[in-house]
Length: 162
Image 1 (spheres, rainbow, N blue to C red):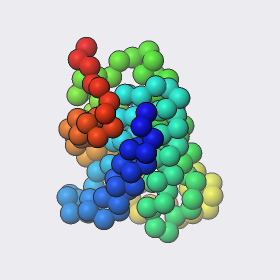
Image 2: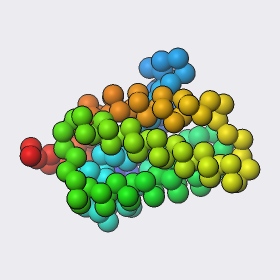
Image 3: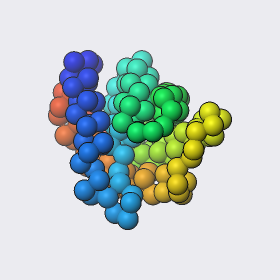
């Protein structure tokens, strides 16, 4: 893993997520680029690297959300990313439909865990839980597999056909 490239890439994507993704929002639903990267690194990196990147991406997701408590996204992205990395040892997720399904399920589970952890912490929940549980993961799963190729190019990860 090229960690300097990873740090620059996560910073760039976090800035894009916080600012420019609003322009492609459809009825207040926008893709979660950090969720897409979480699945990308869980699929194309080793298990140890995927765990480190999952917690780092969760930290970046916590930083860009204004007005929320620090921690729910670190924990949820870290746990769900770790589970996906271990699942990837058993199941190969290389085709685009499977990647879309992995993004949707990961987004749903991470969103549900963020919601539950926010409730436990006493923070106000999102205005519409169905958007964060179904809308954002669905939009991300449609856009996500198309962003895997530029991500692999930037990180110099070789994608092999299987």
